[in-house]
Amino acid sequence: MKANHNQALSTRDMKRFSEQRAAREAAPAAVIPAFRPDGKAFDLVNPTAADIDFAAMANALSKIARFNGIYRGPAYSVGQHSVMGADALFRESGDAVLAGYFLIHDGHEYPFGDVTRPAVDVIQYHVGRLAASAGLNRPDFVTKLVHRAIGEVKRCLDLAIYRAAGIPDIKLMPIYARKVAEMDERMLVAEAKALFGPNADQRCLPKLDLPPPRLTGALEPWGAAKAEIAFIERLERYLGIVVRPA
Image (cartoon, rainbow, N blue to C red; front, top):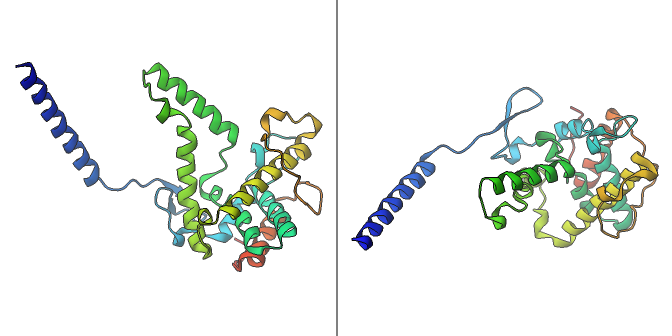
């Protein structure tokens, strides 16, 4: 009887799981709308190349502040970070396409926003704490879950951006991917020192031992208009993308 009872439970469970899976497959795909500049919606779940507007990217990134604008003084924008890092990479390598990849490496932030590293880390901390209190003993699943989820959002947007730019997925070119990631860290260190001064806490900086970027000028905030025009100019210079200011 016990064996038959267990068999019955197993059959019911399998049937329920099958019904749940069928319901999920029959359900419409998720759509998460975000505003476009004209007020229409942009689907963050399933972005396409046709959704990407490089003029809107230049405009938005020129107004998003690095480090959440927490430093004193005017905003130093993601757009300026992208331009200065791209120029530094081109100066070091002579590779316009590599510089172009850096220019648009934060392009996903124009519809998604700049979710800073400390913000991701603290959300992950609380997700882990809440999972533990709920008895979800799956550290293999919970660890870095928030980082992975946000990475998925960025990845979907990045793929649409690459297609719109007419360039390959950077993950197919590991050397390019590494150089862009390293320049991002190098810029982060240089920007933190410039914006926060000698008291910039080392705990907030990457631990990699990398040389400073080869910049031509001081890391001083440009203002949104200058950053937008510079970003648009580099789109054409490095990637052959011609757009007019938004």
